[in-house]
Length: 102
Image (cartoon, rainbow, N blue to C red; front, top):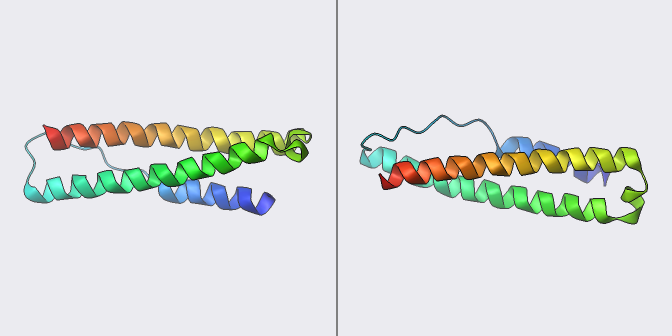
């Protein structure tokens, strides 16, 4: 489980690098294509993070982890971080989709 947790944290970081803001002005074909690609990437990142959250939730439900406050607290922090990244990605997805549809 400790290996899984550190791998999860690295993956959370890898799939959630900061992205530039999207302009909502008239878009060129290239910009539309870039937005479409980014939306697909966001969807993949969200799916990967949701898998991580699911795994972390399963770990937290384990009696062995639940009995160890330090381990439980560390996993819960990773869980909160992943959930926060998912919320950020959903917001970016919404902004990108709005820009694409305007």
